[in-house]
Length: 49
Image (cartoon, one colour):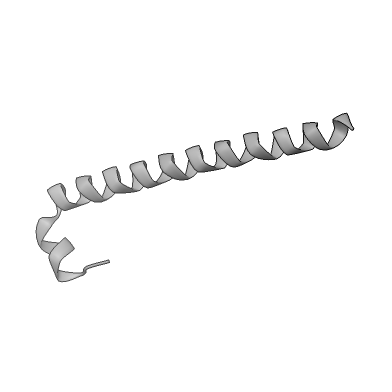
């Protein structure tokens, strides 16, 4: 009976870690986009991504 509980717990932990990683990736992408806009405002407007 313990095994399924442990497996579920591990799945939850992995899910939380995954959410956290996705959040970090989003943050760094947004920061990179912000930097890019500051350094290259003109080319950013010419070629929207």
